[in-house]
Length: 365
Image (cartoon, rainbow, N blue to C red; front, side):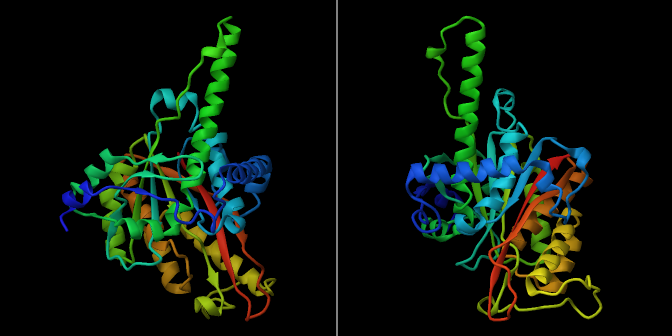
């Protein structure tokens, strides 16, 4: 189908997984996310500096975030880990009154994988609005038109878009931080007006004008990852665009068809590692280091060597290629800083299973 014709067939994306993967009651969901974000913020740099795996230069500190890597399992499993990355967007001043007035962040691009439908390429959401229990997110139709004009992207069908959870698990978090940032702005405005002796009861603050654009990255090969990275680089490097990369890490267990307990023969491993969950964590951190290196070839080599079941490996690889393109062209240079790692359970026996989660913040250097 012609991309322009598909673009005209827009739809409202429903919160398809609400009530199963996360709460559909707005009050309960807000309470849950508030708890996750508050606990992550309270943990602070002490917790962030203890997770290892590409933690980066602490001198980068609070520099402007340009993106996050976040997990996408049910919130009871991965929500606390995702909150470590999302809380940085509030703590580090990206979504605040100063950045709003300067127009710093107007679009959030969500790169996510495809779990249910084979896709040889990349597809953009055809939605005009994305529903969440906390309110609706507007889609950046202008950026979508720009990307479609390249001729490199297809458009998702509504059913494909809604069935895919890896994008949807980010939307309530995004709506939450936008609403929280708006509340912070309103309070600051009221305090300023009170100091100036003005009536703060007339203060009006609309929700921050931030739009999202989900892009599904299919099961593409290395050359395609590099190609799409180069195509996306000029758009993702725009100062007003923030990128969310959605990915879980190792899926270990018979049900995933992946049960290694030691690295390839020529790879040395810490001798103190005894249990399976310790090996999984070690292996994940090797992958996290390869991502933090920002060398697409290093990450591709890691995946080929360990065959780690990182479900968002293609979105990660595309993003790494985009970063490399931006760096080599002198447009932008960033650092990838992993801030949290967790597992759904600690595997000790081969009949058990687990999924790993990691969060990172990408900051401009």
